[in-house]
Length: 253
Image 1: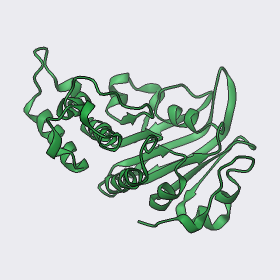
Image 2 (image 1 turned 60 degrees about the vertical axis):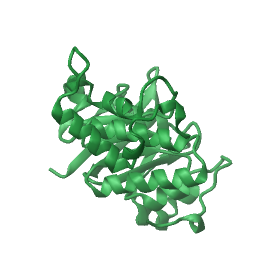
Image 3 (image 1 turned 60 degrees about the horizontal axis):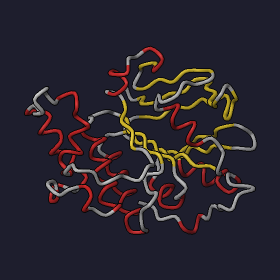
């Protein structure tokens, strides 16, 4: 099955109040989808709902053919991983130990990882490009390096989907571009990546699909990148906000 995520008549919101309604779309496996919209448009609410962190008001969500309303938390953790927007603290863990948290089900009562878990953790670090500092403490890393560690931890969870909330927040320009290039490579290698962002140009440049949260109309518009740019939807997505879409800034990868 090529379907990674599917929404049917979905309405999302909080405290029973709809924010975005009548959402219908699907994403195929091995693609990068970028969720954008003005502040207060419901991006974070939609992302949290798609990832199963909060219940929808109406409709249903399928992840790899499974209705998330009918799976256990353990099963859900095998379908999707999450990288949050919060600034990563230092703590007392090394890079390798932090990535290994993604394999916590494979850690024994005595603290050891199975051989398979060790292989998965090593592969995740290699894929993200952090093997060379596996034994450094998280507190010694730059923000960009820490974000790579968080992505590697999600990879170590070994799920078909990864959801990321503002993955380039707190990063400098070079680290933002490097992070988006990394996520693009992961999609090309078969992962389905769904991320929300205010960092429009580098994200849209690398996207297969664009998901626009339209605040004024309480709707979601989804399409492939080229169609969405040509349609002019992105030009009106941020009406009334300080953010503007400028196609001249796109850097296709």
